[in-house]
Image 1 (cartoon, one colour):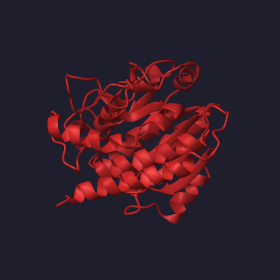
Image 2 (cartoon, helix red, strand yellow):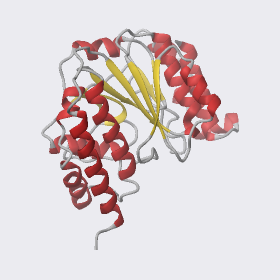
Image 3 (cartoon, rainbow, N blue to C red):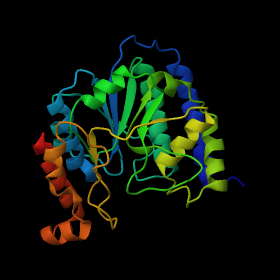
Image 4 (spheres, rainbow, N blue to C red):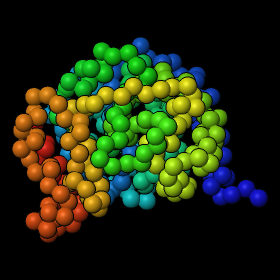
Length: 296
């Protein structure tokens, strides 16, 4: 008897394969730019808004269309959607195909389906998969990406994450993949990747909590693609505040704003910061991000 998770994975894979046949008929534009792609929920709206505001403030000429996929089970309000569209960015709002919760096969297939399609319609530049809790600090990151020649540019996991000594894997908060590489990834390797993780993963890998970062790295390796890793990303990646660690990661900071950013209370431990504010976890994280955006 086929398991429910296998039925979902087979169905999502078959649907993606059919869509690819349609997308292959589309001409690939000759333009080259960076296409930010967000996968989010209504709960994270304020963080998403601050992340986008940092992109707007920097105003990089390399940034093209901005695609935002929201979980249909936790959507934005009409007013929130209006606020996003009023930003001075080329924003496109979409429903996530299968959901945008943390990890799991449904989010994995949501991201893969969206990025596969965008790799056909967004020219020959790069997709930038970015989480809602990322603040960009300067344009050096985008300048370096557009000067580089690579298939995947990523950071290694930092203060948190899962560890597999057999391979380095990408930190999924902000990474870049060339559109040509994304187009070349074999949809039929979706199942073999998932099966291999379940068989030899060093951490829990149930269908509902399979880490997207680790899965995607294994999927790249199944396709013969090795990510290139950098130490700095010129942005801040915030940690989930329910973890007993620092309130955010300053792993990706370098450049002109470094001293200003380090003067902010990012290094306070979570319990200290929460007790000093006495507020909701989400409110705390938004307050920290406001400080970061204000520092721009």
